[in-house]
Length: 349
Image 1 (cartoon, rainbow, N blue to C red):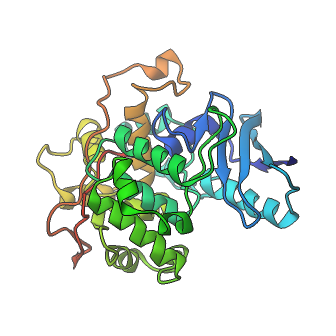
Image 2 (image 1 turned 90 degrees about the vertical axis):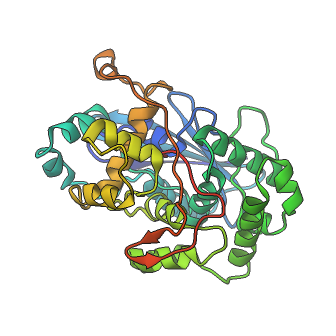
């Protein structure tokens, strides 16, 4: 087995544990594993799957992420190492400029308390825009627990079985989804509409009919329009992909019911507030509303998982479970009409 070790510099006061929890969202996530010290996942490369293991080293003022890459049966080429170094940096948000966030929190006591509770978390991204969009489809109209369970089953069904039960599942590629049978995906628990959406997405990406990574070159409105032109993708799924797949930290998915619950509890959002009210509130935090989205996720998750918080920081008001998120009928974004998700989304995360 080929193996390569390297380190990546991290921002001051960085915390790998909180960042990985914001990435994985639930303890039973089989793609992004965390044992309290090590983050493990399988990364697709041109040469085949590579197992990535990462841990935190250094000091609070000089933190580093130690990475090991392992590939069964062959060495790992320098080009792949460089690509995966960039992947680690992007997925863990290590190169994101958050210099203005401290100024924002200084003017809002409630926001300062929330940010202080999870200090060191960096805004993570999925390894690809494709992975973000597949996760969005899986979680439409379902609890986050069920949605991640579906992703686990999809990964286990379409990719090679891991060496042992403790090994991470490999996230499926577009080509693997393109070859999948709709009936087989339904047997995994996906609705007929979701199964068709996933297979169609895999085929379009594989055939080059849509370049999801090229969405990075589009503005938000154009990106949403491009995504919602896909069957089964509505406003919530598109905005979720913008923040979690493209790292658009000014985007807070306004239809996310879990986020709305957190905004009600933390920031006084009205119980009957809709998309427009969430958007208005999010403008107060420009350009970091999406970063607050991640903080609200951890705030809810802290009641269900060990986030490594001290007892003093763990205290406070009770935290609700993550709630639903959905694309409402006749959804509109930035005053532009968009298609409704075939099965709208659920839960902040």
